[in-house]
Image (cartoon, rainbow, N blue to C red; front, side, top):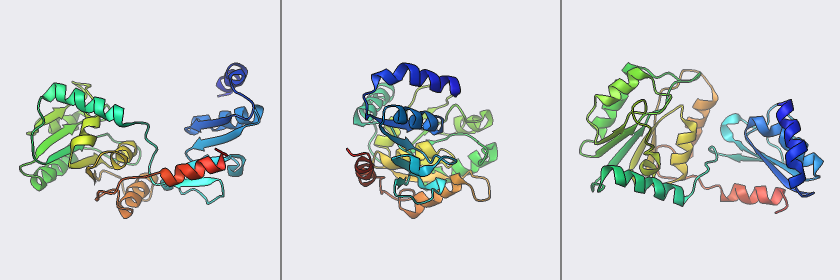
Length: 257
């Protein structure tokens, strides 16, 4: 971190005008953001909660609610992760999907996005079999689409591969990304609960009703808080979409824009 920060200060700083606004995205950028902003007498803004730092030393902070940020005048709470995408990205994804599958059938479409286990979640063959069978039973007659990810265990991919999907991507065999098309075209979209970034994306873009496949370990942790908060606010289990226009307006105010 020290070497990277030194390079940033010595090489990148001359490109910044005095009084620039410096924005850091991710925990690895917090120190550099403060340092560069101080050197150019600018303002410092970060995305994610800079735990362990002097919170008031930043001019604006966009922090997900699941991090339980302590209220401060410069802190703006957001319900989900920020997603870097636009309509052009999704339109390109839909066109790529159509090029692969041909004409999109009429009728209801159900997408399933499967991630993988982490320190707060488990993903087993038995979980996959029971969860996916419930989804098929609940949506008889619908187009059923699925994709796994680079994190999906092999035994789970085997369960997925054996089922009668209308469209499927098994990531270990095929790296095609159908998720932009799923987000835009599906009526209902299931996402495994540990995939906070994908849940955030599905709850921000498209029109699908987003549902969560619960594979979280017991006990309080930020993944559980995230899913419960999103459900309580109507983003999960409903059609409400995340709108951050108010939060962005407040960030611009704090940064003097």
